Length: 139
Image (cartoon, rainbow, N blue to C red; front, side, top):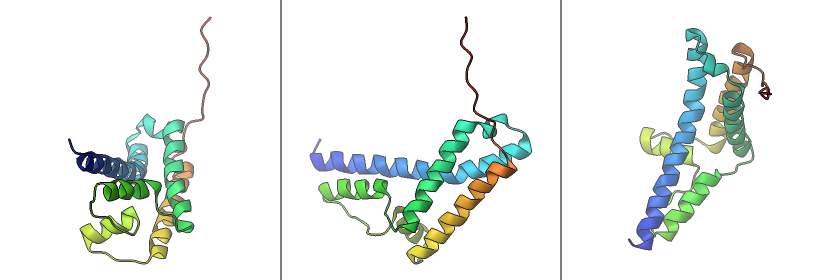
C-alpha cells in the first residue's frame, strides 16, 4: 500500500474519531436529559459526567482563544502528507458549511459552544451525578 494511501486512511480514521467526539458531546447531553426522564441510572455516573463536561469544556476554551482543534490540525497534516485536499477553518465550521451550507464568523461558533457548555454545566444541577465512591477492598 502506498504511503499516501496510508496517510489518507489515517486522516479518515482521525476524522471518524472527531465525529465520534462531537456525537459524544451532543448526544451525551441529550441522553442525560432523556435518561433523567426515563430514570436511567447510568446518566448519573460521575465518570461519564466528568468526561462529558471536560470534553465540552475543552471545546469552549479552544473557541474562546481561537484555537483550531488539534484533531483538525493533525488530520490536515495527514491529508497534506498524502497530497489531499485541506480546509482552513475549524472542523465544525467546515462541516456545517459543507453539509448545511451555513457560514458564520468564528465568534458565532464560540457563542454556540459556550451556550452548549452552559447547558452541560446546568445539567449537573438538574440531573446531578452520583458522587464518586471508593471501592472497598475485600478482606
